[in-house]
Length: 148
Image (cartoon, rainbow, N blue to C red; front, side, top):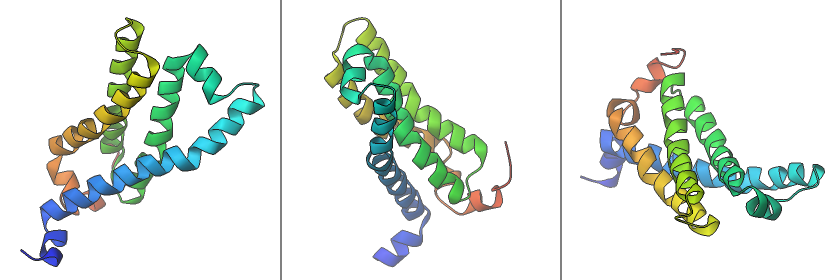
């Protein structure tokens, strides 16, 4: 199978979609991170202070900064609200899990941040595999205006 055939195959669509979402996640961290730091500064805080004083909130902020552009990209690509909500959940479930580990003292903030990011990638993949048809073809374009 040539590259062109792969890219237009259902597997190629699936892989492309996964890569696009990962790029959107990291772009969100970079593009939204600076304004978020500005908002914290306006309230007399910083990400370093938040990390020290409220590390769980910092993990939630990081998940939010990565989820918003990913869901926006999915919406732009024609996915309905349900797949968008499922993908957003796939980002926050690992966040809540590492927050729990941090809460019981099993890991510190640095490990929690690394584990949060590492766990999000397979979590997204699981969400995609549960809706393989949604992510491996163009069927999502038909459902653009559906809410279910």
